[in-house]
Image 1: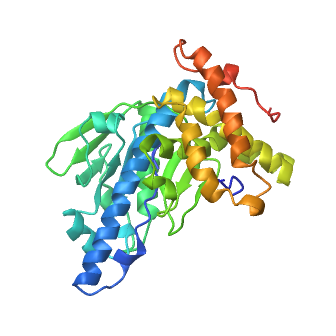
Image 2: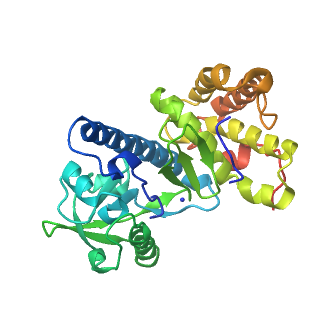
Length: 326
């Protein structure tokens, strides 16, 4: 299907990798305008990914074994881009540090943070003073998010200072410890233990939101069920990978239900995705056939319907694992 578990910066954030076209030294004119249009599209995709991801990790936080305090914020640094001047001009940013996304419903969004707001200080420290290369340097971005993580964990909140001198104090809520990243000029989707990563051309971006959420939930399932650790310990045989893929399929509707989505969206996603991407006789033997996958999902959905009168669909208690974990 869509995942490769064998292969992330606040508690909910990542390094955004710009579309290469805007990083090139393109001349002004149609080529440059086209590059700007693509770049803007990537920003919109990233916002959608973060919004859906936030619903999933916050809605399932009380059932994840490794939930952490999170504020749903991504910052970006103009120095991380190949053409910082072009990105500043496109986004209307005067400084180097700005809000990239504030996930809908997160503490950051509820505090009024929005894309492109210039940030001058984080917990009293001006990140502009941290050394960085002039372009294509992501390390200061990582340092900013690590600093936010530390303050949220140790102090219980973090204060951002915006360009107009306004302080915004953010108090975290619990979220499953998984980040969401838009990265790569490809159609892939994968989980690698701590991140869910979608390529720019992932077909699910064209699907209805709930079905895209189902695809993201499949990848998130790999992370919250610690599949990478299990495969590291038990080997990546075809049969082992298939077990983890089946578990990820089966957990999809549970994660969707707790995020406020219709759990049946997992079935709709598989019925849309499977006939096109399953591969027929050439399908990967690490995955069940798409029609079998629908049957597994539907069996879980029947159980969820019985439990939805409860406060949250507790998959830690009611979801039956197919692999043995410590």
